[in-house]
Length: 319
Length: 273
Ligand SMILES: Cc1ncc(C[n+]2csc(CCOP(=O)(O)OP(=O)(O)O)c2C)c(N)n1
Ligand SMILES: [Mg+2]
Image (cartoon, rainbow over all chains, first blue to last red; front, side, top):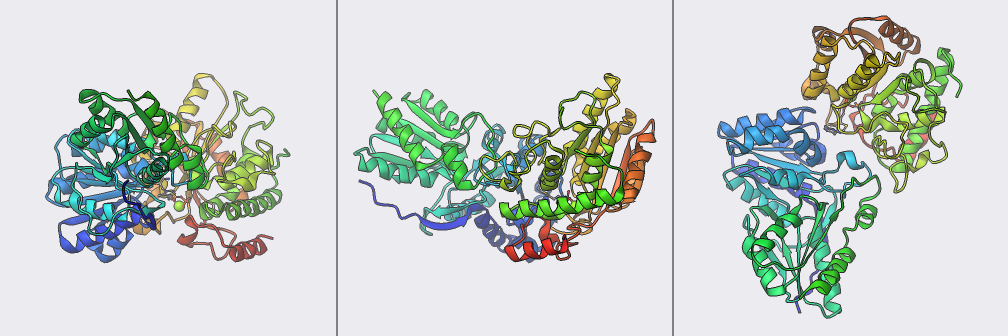
């Protein structure tokens, strides 16, 4: 059986984003940051204080911010443009498409307050379609780190990667999954637990839930493999094909609409390689509501309990 | 509900609504007090004097429409709508809680008497123009009122709407800018200055009225002037104080989006007594 995980309380991925942005600012004078009147919430405020000359406050004008960022990138800067994911992707989509994706410029966009775990502000501020939108942009790299360590590492990887990147961050504090020495490669899933009966593929907030689900399943005699898909695009096709072949059943879990999310992207690879039964844990064709983050992830079925239930369902269908 | 044009009566209602909004935000432990307090007189004068509406018949076809485009300031709108009888007063303090109709931002799925779901800034004026054009097509006397934040009008879509409104002579729409000089990260002048704001709206073809947004007779006069202005839309620039009525919230960016503590709440209620 896989090693027991100790999930200690950790920082929010937006806090790790803010920290990593400061490190990058120190390391590389070409790094600039943009925000749209949310720097205290996205956590780009630290960078703004430390490097006022390289911080560009755009006001409440996300579309303009994205295209300005693309212009900066076209001229050789490494811009990180941040806002709530909902506003960044929905207001800035045309700009992401035509000024960043088409010309393949080196723009990094960071969407914080993603998913439904922002809680009380409610659905107008929640982003449950950002992964789908970002993945629909050819040439974009799409990252969704699960904890502070992976966010820090992947921010550095994003800065080194040449090309447009979308990084998804959350508002809520999340457990620490990784030791500080863990390595991350864009496009390579991390195997958190080995298992033979079923694979739990998770991203972001759901990675910790998948680990907890695997521990529950282990107590029932079910051996679950847990993969952290911190990179949604490009997908780690090899890890998916291997999981399908070796475990014969897959559950995908994400804090995102099931429509257009990681799950359907994984399903495509499964269909192309080794078709096996799959189940999907995510937000089902609806907008959420105001409540505490804990109440929402319970009501909308994003807990370890839901991942474990999906695993039991998929095992019944396994041939 | 009892409508009134008496400024003293309206001011008394505004004070009560401020208290209710503070109670709601304190109970929720989150929300936006500053921008709720800055529009108390505007929303109260709208619902209790200016708007042609009927709480018993919220879907009346010829009603005037009110859109709170700066949706984060919904506590004051909920308080006023409940006072009018659109929704229950007893549950106002369930704001932002699981199962409450009083969502963190206006949501027509939960309160059908709301004219629009808002919360993503920049959309309300376009929506209002659509409603106003529909009234023109129907030869309806309905007017549409849209309250915008001053930070909000940094969104480019506001200026697309402004251009459209004057070109199409949508004189049955009224934009009210809550010019409280503060947005989320600080003062508007430091983030992305809007001045000269009146000149901007005028150059986009709008009739502009500058007014003290806490002066009820001045607001009433401005609303009447707007209704009498034909052939072009009107924009009221309401000069307000963010956090108005609670000394430590006034002009204090901290209270854009922070709920008062228990002590602060007590102090606020004393000041609003
Ligand atoms: C499109 C969009 N971008 C950002 C936000 C986050 N946000 C909420 S309130 C606010 C500041 C609004 O300032 P202002 O319009 O002046 O409102 P007020 O001062 O009346 O509270 C921001 C940036 C949002 N709700 N929508
Ligand atoms: Mg303001």
